[in-house]
Image 1 (cartoon, rainbow, N blue to C red):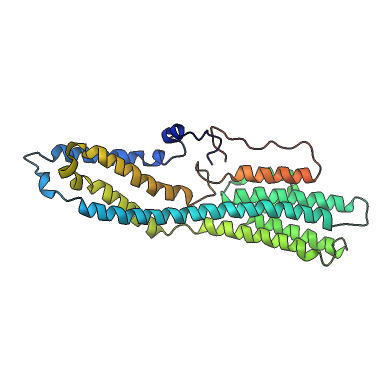
Image 2 (cartoon, rainbow, N blue to C red):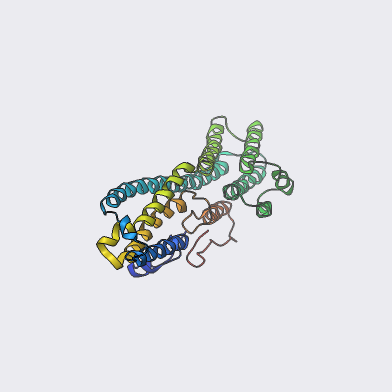
Length: 313
């Protein structure tokens, strides 16, 4: 996610990183070059391209319809992005609530017994938020080794065979809570409260997985790309009689706008990746880890992730 950049009008206007230009400049260049060729051949006595002249009316009508269509597509993509952010906001809240519930509702008559369980369960929650990030980003197994600081080595090794590793972590956490209940460390009225937090985690995870596993329908994307391409490529035939030699410049501006709007939908429809406008999952999971470590009374805390070249991952 792009952050920490002074939001002056001129700087934002001239910025390339984080914009759609790195994705669209080839299309814009091709369309503009094609418009230059058409313009050069327009009055050629041999080719006679002028006989294919069109009025601006069909392009005006199609442009309005296409703007509405692209707006709907981008609204759909942004809804996915914003829902992903809200789900991770719930992960932040439920992690803090679960930690509080563990440390206040689980008590034992044995000296230090509950404290050991508190630390284990809270560290498991740290492992869970990092595991959810790794899961949503399809990280390789070597990246999962960072969980070794939160859970035992044998459990980490067992996770390798799991298809849904965050779910396996929550399942084991639930078993530890149930074991504490059988020991009498959790009151019968408090057990549903803690279980409710675990259920909330799985519900939020399911929402994230739904976004990840259900992209915008492919046919919808194909139709959008085709309409924009056809419109921009054929536009010179509707402009030459009106703007003449300025046709390539006008086509370049229109192509910049429509190709950019088309690319924005592609950029934000998958919010859990590494694109400049995707969610900063690493920063969010590290923030949760620091919050939970402080609840355990730790003073040597890992640093918060800072923007690198204006971007958080």
